[in-house]
Length: 444
Image (cartoon, rainbow, N blue to C red; front, side, top):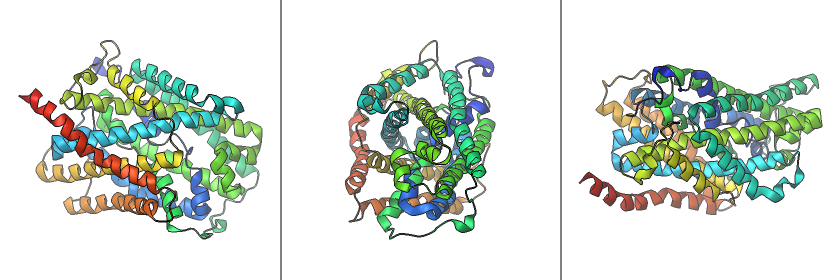
């Protein structure tokens, strides 16, 4: 275990900053949720936003709180799986997490350009240089330490949430009907593939609750701070997701327009240019906050793996002044720089599938550690026995299988992306064969 970067709690994240980072490592606001209204309609979209957290999110949150409190080590989920299942499976966990995070990070600079285009329509012509600028400015801020990222996340979080708060207020004053009895549950010929893409969209907007575990040693009083921060972030995310889609449904916006132009189009529809501009500004802040926070989270995992000899030792280096894994941060930024050319729908499927594989290992590690180390102190303990934990694990697995089956169906336009995602999962055993001799040689 490494020591905190600064003694006496100075230089560590506090609950407010941690809440902002958790918010961004999971959500960054409703941005990216827009397609769900087109896929499944208002009624089913609202139902997915309420039901998916029960099946996909709550099990993950409970698992994170127990294992993070039990093993407060930087590297988080990698450390849990390594401890419960061994070094090989720990490598698989780190490998899959690295891949899905690179995929995830590639989305946000593109979204930044999309929302910037509201103010500067010609921004799309400079997509690549703008994306690269976002990547490297975020990397430089990460190199300055965890506190600048935490403080920036608080400010960016306010920039995301305030425009949506104004949107809800304006929609109410405009007299739009928010009666649940008027929400439509018409399927309009919705098939299994379309429902699956709606589910994938909602799952993607709810993934990443384990991300913040990777820097737990850099958090003040982590057991208490994570409990407070995750609960607050959960209710913020679910609440704003529900209200944003409800507003879109109540306002009667064309779902295709919302998908193509994002929430700024809903602002235009409800309040005019100024509200569209506010939501575009929020989208820019969201993309920045997401990239900053997720880069912070993922950069600690290669360091932990390098400490175990599974990756080049240079990745384990820590900056003497800012106490961050600077080489890991730079490598992550470099890889993402080459991944800004993918289609959004394909990235979403690849992202969720790789994340599903990684989080499944975390659930298995939770169960195994309950069996092997039942008496190890756990500041937070899920009030379930082993049988209950197995049943809890089945819920997110069921979500993933349903969504993946839809993507693989014959009518799906996303079959190639789903097959690529499966192939990406299968690269872990190949990569292990490459790094295993190095580990054995180092150990000898």
